[in-house]
Each structure stands twice: as structure tokens, then as C-alpha cells.
Amino acid sequence: MRGDQTAAWQGLSELAKAFSGFDLRDAFAADAKRASRFSQEAPGVFADLSKNHWDAKVESQLLALAAQAGVLTHRDRMFQGEAINNTEQRAVMHWLLRHPAEGAAAQALPAPVKAALNDVHQTLNAMLSYAEKIRLDTQITDVVNIGIGGSDLGPQMAVMALQSYALQGKRFHFVSNVDGHELDAVLKGLKSENTLFLVASKTFTTLETMTNALSAKRWFEAQGGTDVARHFAALTTNVEAAGKFGIQTCFGFWDWVGGRYSLWSAIGLPLSIAIGADNFRAFLAGAHAMDQHFLHADAAQNLPIRLGLLDVWYRNFLHYTSRCIAPYHSALKRFAPYLQQLEMESNGKQVDHAGQALPYGTSPVLWGEPGTNGQHAFFQMLHQGTDVVPLEFVAVKNATHALPGHQALLLSNVLAQAQALMVGKSDAGGHKNFAGNRPSTFILLEDLTPFNLGALIALQEHRVFVSGAVWGINSFDQWGVELGKVLAKDIHARIESGDVAGLDASTAQLLQRVRAA
Ligand code: F6P
Image (tube, rainbow, N blue to C red):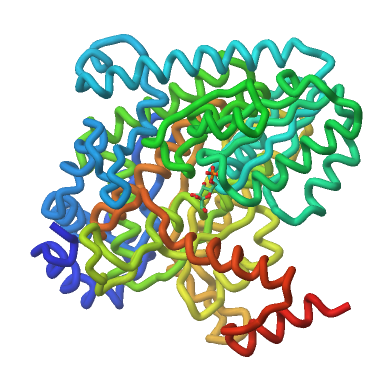
């Protein structure tokens, strides 16, 4: 049942009315156990949700909402391999990519899912042995991933995040934009005999990727490169198209892996080259541990469920329209852009599963930057602006560098920001007044290891699943990206021909300006 049709939704509306006077400082004063009540361990992470605008009553009503809206049933259907991506008639099984090949859980999978698991492990083994071969190949000094969206953001984010595990002597480049400046700048620093191009595209039809791949191949040939099989590999579900393009080395995946959920598949090849097979397996194991937590932990102590429900409370009942991500680790520089696709492409929908218009808001706007940089830019607005923006801090306890002093300063800052947002500072209502009572979630990792990163990403995937399930939407399609693609094709032809017939006056004017000599 769609969230808004449940009794719990009504209950939450009532609770929200009484909530305008809620103050975090009072809530902590009134409940000595608040910090622990709203904190928990989950695989790879510790999370403190206590500095959020909710209380035990709200949380228990949210849990009732999850039960009444059938979130757990929906979860179970995903883990049984049912076609919950109903508009494309596809199963949603990115979780299978990190499932162990053997063991009781593997045996218990439905037969078709078990068969898919065998394919998963065959491809994984082939991909990891290829990754190891490339790691040993000292002639390959540069790996260029050509892909966009899920075929770029995930591997790019993870390669950067796990840079302290990365093999020395290889450079990784990510080219996504159809803007030739990006590829051109990368190519300028390369030699064809030292370069491996990975053409990453689920569909192998995406305009940006195909344009960049073609230019890369032309550049390679112009440099005298001949051995395409050695210098190009394709990561795709469309092996046939990759073959037609002239790439023989191919690692496949399946239509039941959404692009933004594909980091665990062949799309993870750059990461596996960077960190090696064992570390890549640890990365998968972290995500699998989070899958198990999501599947088996009691809802009240189930971190993806708690976070996803908090997201619904904020969006639909307290009407907060955005969420800021502040990772306090510079290697998590690309974490916010990665999460933007994950959340906004999954849940940025205006109709339910059945295509009926929704009477409530869905995906919040996600944005962010690593701390402490954000503190010297937009945190002003978070502390004193007129809108309440819930923050999600991600901090890592241990550093991998040995520079004295930095880590304690970094951690002091992240703790102080969460504290300052909440406690505020009274200054008679003037410019220096901080109202406080600003909500935040605090996620803490011991170390930024492959296991912990895998768990952290899977946590985010499942919290998006939970809010999407309450909203009754299909979180696994992305029809909203199609119109722009179609119109770009039409405009492209018009840029060649100069034909503006039938265009609106603004588009016609701009087209004429970009064509003018
Ligand atoms: O246009 C959106 C999208 O389809 C994303 O969902 C996807 O991650 C991206 O494009 C890239 O698609 P592909 O991997 O098929 O090139």
C-alpha cells in the first residue's frame, strides 16, 4: 500500500503538527538515553541519529508506516529476484553481485537467481584475473575509464576513496563528458603503448561514451597503436555492440543491474585494477554484510530502514527539501556526486508504480562537499540561513597518512560542526546569533577500508530503497532522462542544417547564435 494511504501516515501528520516546538537541546535534556537510543552499529559503520528532529514516538510511527506500506515485503521481493522494476519488467539484483557463491544463503536462492549467481561468479573471477594481469603489466601505466552516470560516478568515487590501497605506478583517468576538452586534456598526457581504455557502458549506446570511445580509438590508431584487444576493454551488457565497435576483450553484466547500482559488476574493473582482487572481494564482502543486515536485522535496529524512514519524515512531514552530505575525508571527494545519482535518479519521480500522480514530495535535493572545505563556503547558510537543511556527516576515525596533528583537527571540526548546529549560540537575536536546533546525522567509520566503503555504499543504496518503497515509486527506472536525449538528436541535426522551423523562439535564437560565424 502506498505510504499516504496508511493509517500511520495520518498518525505522522498529527505528530508533525505538534512538532514545530521540538528542540533538540530539550530532547537531550529530557532523555539521558537519547544518544544511545538513536545510535547503532551496523556492518562497517557506527551511526548516531540522535541529533535529528524526531523522538521515540515519531520513530515508532515511522516503523508502523514501513510495516503498513509493505516495505519489508518489497525488500523481500527484491531479494527473491522478482521483477520489482515494473516499468522495464526487470528484477533488481545488484545485491547478487556481492553474494558469496557458496553457503546456505546461496543454496536457499530461487533456482533462476542461483543460476544468475553462477554467472556472476564466473564473470567476477574472469574480471579479477584480468585485473591482476593488468596490475602486473608494467607497460600499462595509464587506465582511462570512458563512461558516464553509473558507469563513471561509482568507479571514480571508489578509486579515489581507496587511493591508499591503490597500486603505485598506474594512473587512473575518468572521462565522462561529451565536451571534448575533457578527453583532449587526458589524451595529451598519454602514450598509446602505455594506455588501457575501458569503455564502460551498460547499454553501449550512450552518446557521450560512444563519442569519447570513438575519439579514443581514432587517437590510438593515429598514434600507431594496432593491438586494440590489448589496449581496449568493454564493460557492458551489450557484448554484441562492443564487438561491432571492434572491442574483443569484454566483461559483461546483466539487465537486472541498474546503472547507478553497477559498481559491483564489471563496471568495478578500474577499482579492481587499482586495489587488486583481494581488496575488491573485501569491498564486495562489506556490501554483502550490509545486505544481510538490511535483510535480517529487526526493523527498529535496521540502519537502512531507520535512515530511509527519517528521510520520509523530513521530506513529507517536516518539509525539508534537501540534504547536505559532508564527508570529513578528502578521499571521499566524489561521494556527494555519486549519491546524487543514486538518490535523485532513483527517487526523483512524480508518479507511483501504477503511473498515478503523487500528492507528496519524493527525492530531496542532495548536495555536498568534503569538510572542512564546506565550512568555509556554504556552512554559513546551514548555521544561519532561513531553511533547515539536515546534514549527514561521514567521518573516518583513523587516517592512513602520518602527518602529525591533522587528524585530530579534522575530527575536532566534524564533531564541533555537528555540535554547533545543534547547540547554537545566543546573541540577542543579532548577526552573531545562532538559533541552533539544526539536525544532523553522524556516520563514523573506523577506517576507510574496502570492506567499510562497500558497507557504506550498500547502506546508502538500501536507504534509498526504503524511502522509495514508502513513496510507492519504482526506484529502478529513469524515464526522466529520455526527453533531453531525443531533443539533443533533433537539435544536433539542426545545428548542422540551420533549420529552426517549429522551434520555440528562445531555442531558435540560441541555435542561431551558436551557429553564427
Ligand atoms: O541517462 C541516464 C543513464 O541511463 C544512467 O542511468 C546511466 O548510469 C547512464 O545513463 C549511463 O548509461 P550506460 O552505462 O548505459 O552508458
